[in-house]
Length: 336
Image (cartoon, rainbow, N blue to C red; front, top):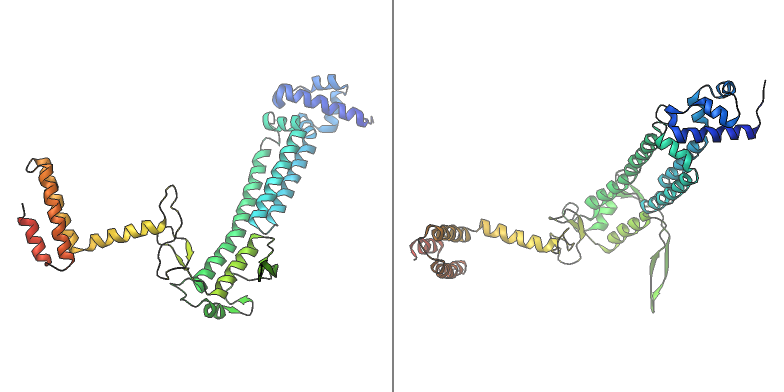
């Protein structure tokens, strides 16, 4: 039996790669590969079975290497235990993957452009499925921490659902360092120091190695200092009750606008108050009726403006208690 040397095999693989790149898998011809490489077609069939087997021999080492690199990158990101670190690992992995692809450019060009009809036709779909699976696990992993934090806010810090005494609520919901409810946030040792932070003052200093450390430190600090939170009635996110404990809106800027939630909340409250105010409703009803008279030609713009000024003054009198609501309604109907 003929035993081919490593050099002959390399020549055959290079010849096959050249043929597949030039003609694609479907139109590649084993006779041309045989002629180019000096390896008989019979020997090619014996070693690789068929044309698909030869194509696989050309791309498999690089394809397997990329998949291995891909899985290593994904595993490192998944096991980081921290979103920021996972993102950093993912970015680093992406750079390594791209570098690897360019180092094996011809092979991946074959897989990208000329693999139809081979087992590598859906190779990149498999990569995408692997990445999608990882991201689902990633989201599930870190959404669990988010749910635990939200549960902690509701049970310990939320002024509406837990009251104004975080220390009592924490003692009620935790047994030593373990939550009584497994869905609650679990506190763990964090890298905390105590050192000078400015002349004449020392304070705890967190040397965080993960985002979770910062979350942990923030939650325990809120409990220690008695800081409560409340969901903003505009954006729905929690905000600390550092000023007025009755505040219902946060100071965050509204997306795509310059207004803040507090400003929007104040306008909503004013609008609701006006809508529910019988004095304002009576004034507004007559205002709309008379405004329609302008279009009908019954009064001029100036006449309407003069009336509206007098009507606003009468409304102010009613709000101050100088006249009754019935007197205001009578004036609105009979005034000219």
